[in-house]
Image 1 (cartoon, helix red, strand yellow):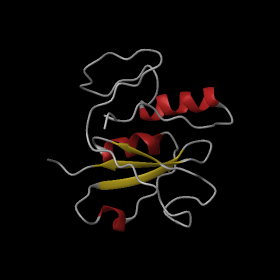
Image 2 (cartoon, rainbow, N blue to C red):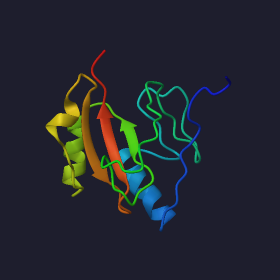
Image 3 (cartoon, rainbow, N blue to C red):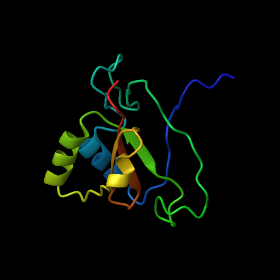
Image 4 (cartoon, helix red, strand yellow):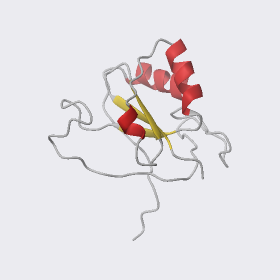
Length: 128
């Protein structure tokens, strides 16, 4: 099969420009951003990411893992979750953590919401 990875994530927003600014400012995500150690420099349209694991999984329509009125939840793989949470907390962004999310050796998790109420799961995989 010819698929080699995700090429983009597109979703509706009430104020796309403001939401794009929020993602860039607080998470370093979006066109013009690059992850540390990214091979290519960013450009105005592309977010340069690092390769690694990605889960692609439909959930049951009745799941309570994220809000029933939302069709998706973004999961972002991060380095130094604790450091990122400190920055988000300092910016006044509410953070949700639950000990059961970190069980099973999958890594550490936290959840925030963007200004339009979309859930963002932050995932720090276990050290290799």
